Image: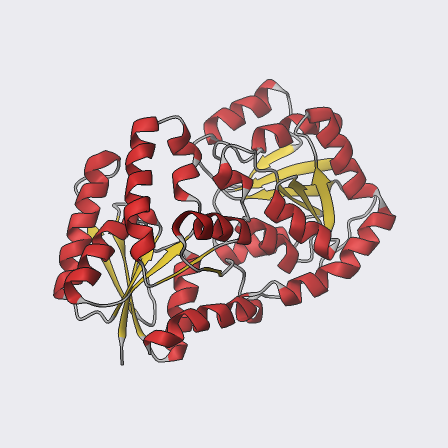
Length: 367
């Protein structure tokens, strides 16, 4: 049985994409080894395949990336690996060196447009280094795939590598089908945001819009760098009765909460190409739960919503305009009837079981 290493820079706990890839590889007859790092606050990881987490001295900055890749390189070098899989650019240096020395194939799974993430946009020196590494290493991989068509097209043009598209979709067979209970007239409608409370996610705009939206509550399921700032904003605007912070929820509980929502929002801002090409997991979670959506006017999300006719597009993040859009999406019964009728078809098509076929085509050559 051929052994495949899957390297990521996180602690493995919440990275559902690499877990799904590992399970698919297992079904294909490979032996996956998932490699990440161990943090003091990391939870126990129990999987039916091998995992390895490294405890590092550094947690951020240049020394962190150097230490991670150095430790990863030596681990890969001493392991009997037949196929090396690098998840994102920050794991590629170690995987490339190990694959060259051991003369084994290298596969690249790009979870985002790494050199266009907001954290690098304002740091030209750091961004130049990562871009230089990308230009050197990506053209030398043996196979590659990424999360959406837009990013795949950019990489194909830049590096002449045939990037396949494997979207990070839910496993439909594992989604619990809960019945959505329509609310009575005296119950407030629920607008749900799930995900990180970080820069560029449009959460602040959603909160401000609640000043102009009656008969609804905004539920925020997640945590992040801006959590404290957003809580202060809610107090400042006297919206404590209309905005609820649910915190970071376990997956099963998050799904239960999502099924209670009347509208799911994904309002990413256009902060560079990585966000412009965003295709967030939460969009597909809303769809699987049968919840109509309101998304930013960004190409990948707009395509999904318009193709399946399952929600509305926000042309602006201005608070009053956004409130009007939410009001229409929550209370226009004619629109909602169409969206609700179309959501089951979207849920049936947008699932991992379909994306898995593309993944199999990538790895079949290495069996």
